[in-house]
Image (cartoon, rainbow, N blue to C red; front, side, top):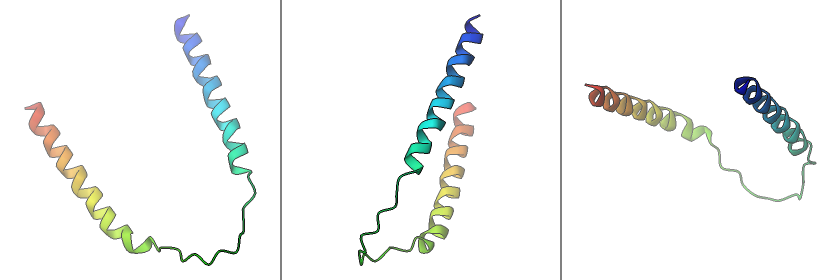
Length: 68
């Protein structure tokens, strides 16, 4: 009975979160006409990908050493 009740609460939580995100996404876009220069993130994709792979390798090796 506890498992059934826990699943129902989790289901209600997911439905509530999905319902609330619809309001966040439905906000109007503000167009102030700013002349702000956007920073291109395309230049950072490759270095961040390499850094992510290195971090995954480091933590994986660290986890293997700690298990032995």
